[in-house]
Amino acid sequence: MNKSEKKFNFGEFYGKWGTLMILVVIAVLSALFVPNFVKPRNLINVLLQNAVVAMLAFSATFVIILGHINVAYGSELAFIGCISCLVMNSVQSSMSPVVAALVSLIVAVLVGMVIGGINGYVITKFNIPAFIMTLAVTTIARGGALLLTNGTPVAGMNDAFNWFGQGYIGPIPTSVIIMIILFVVAWVLLNKTCFGRHIYAVGGNENAAIASGINSKKVVKRAFLLDGIFTGIAAVVFMARQASGTPAGGLQYEFDAITAVVVGGTSLSGGSGNVVGTIIGAIIVGIINNVQNLLHINTYWQQVVKGLVILIAVIIDVVTKRAAAKAKK
Image 1 (cartoon, rainbow, N blue to C red):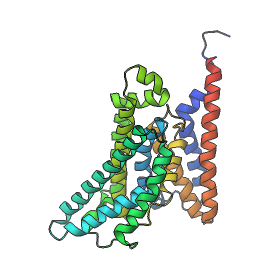
Image 2: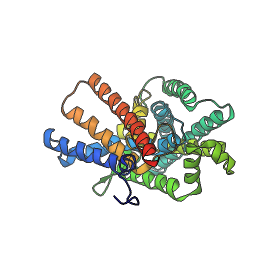
Image 3: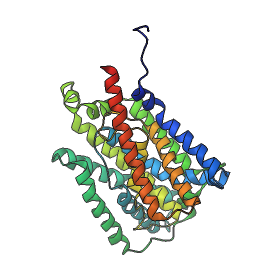
Image 4: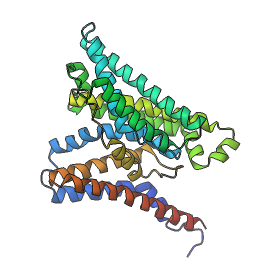
C-alpha cells in the first residue's frame, strides 16, 4: 500500500456528509412508510412549521460554536412577540397597515438586540455560564410576557402584520423566504467575515485566540447581539403565523432549535459547526415532528423521541471526534 495514500477518515467523512445522509435516509423512509408525507401540502407544512425553529437555530449556531448555549428562546419569542403585537395595536390606528407592521417588526428587533446585548454583557462581565444566565432570562421573559398581556392573547393584528407568518410571495411562503434570507446572512457572516473567523477561533481555543490578539469578550457580545436580532425577527413571524400575541407561546422552541444545531453537526463543546448543517438539521427535526404527527403518536412519546435524537447526535459527535483524532495520530 502506498504510504502517501490517504486513509479513510470516518470523522472527516461524517463531518462533511453525515447530516445530509441522515436527512436522505429519513426522507426516503418517511416517503415509503408514512401516508401523505410526500403530498406537496404536507411538505410545505414541514417548512412552514419549522421556519421559526430554523431562524433561531441559525443564530444559535454562532453561540454554540463559541461553546455557549441559550436556553431562553421560547420565552424570548413570547416576550418579544407580545411586545411587537402590543405596539402593533397601539400604532395601527394612526398609521397605514404596512407602516404599522414594519414599526412592530423594528421594535421586535430592537427589543431582541437589548436582550441579546444584556445576555452578552452579563455573561462576559461576570463570567457567568450562558446556560445559567439564559435560564434566568427564561423565567424573566416568560413572566414579562404574562405581565404585559395579563395572561391573555393580544388580538387585532392586521393583515400586513399577519403576512410575515401567513403570506406568500408567489408560491413560496413569506416565512420561508425570511428564513432563507437569514440563512444567507448567517452563512456570509460565519464564512466570509473576520467576525466568523473569530467565532471559530474563540470557540476552538479561547486562550490561543486571546494570545493572537482577538478580543474574545467582544466576540461573545456580538454573537449574543446577533442572537437577539434573529430572535426578534423570529418572534414576529411566530406571532404573525398565529395572528395574535400569545404569552404562553414558544414552549419547547429552544429545545428544537438546539436539537437542529446539534443534529446539524455543531459540537456542543464549541469550535466546529456551520449553518448549512444547521438548516439540514432543522429540516430533519421538522420531518421527525411531522412524521410523528401524521402517525398520531402520543405527544408524550414525541418528547421521548426528540430527547433521544439529541442524545444520539451528541454521542455521534463524540465518536466522530475520537475517530478523527485517532486517524491523525
